[in-house]
Amino acid sequence: MRKVRAVALAVLLSVPAGSWSMGNGNGHGRPQPLTCPEDVAAAIAERCRCDDQRNHGQYVRCVVRFRNALRKADCLDAEAKRTIARCAARSTCGKPTAVLCCFTQLGTCSDPTPGNLMAEGTCSDDVEVACDVDGDCSTTRARIARDEAACTASGGTPGGQGSVCGACVTSTTTTSSSTTSTLP
Image (tube, rainbow, N blue to C red; front, side):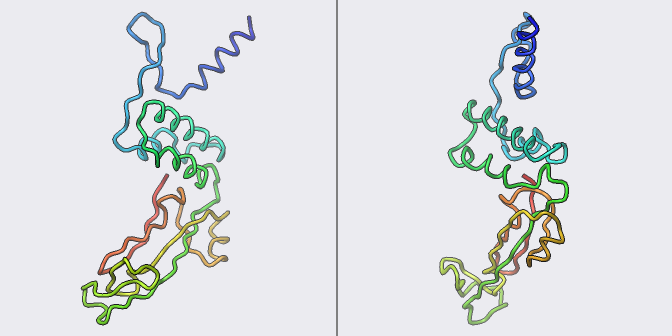
């Protein structure tokens, strides 16, 4: 009998929080359909808080379970199904000293009159991108470094906590480019 109770408890604890309710008022818990969130990334960040995890595996496990619930509820497109777990795995969550390490590679712009706020040139590394100055042609990538010192030593710029997905994103405009870091 104890084994049956232990198995039942383990099954109950493995169900993501909030997916069970009291059903139709008769006291029998029944799984309720998950309502698809408008912002999946925000829902994941709320459900699986990066700061609350004891270790990286616990964070990834939380994200994968929630992703699976969203997938079963048909809330995700094909791209999200593929990338959510990969982005969680490539995050600093559960790694107390780890940081995002951003590397920027500057491209060159062929604009004949740079700085006039008119994108009249194209980037050397991507002729489809119109540009005004070399900064418009910057590309940035991120990786996880064990700490800020290791990031700096490898030539990168520490970018805080989060996931490499969406981190260190360079926005291209005809007036400036900027680097931002986002949480998973």
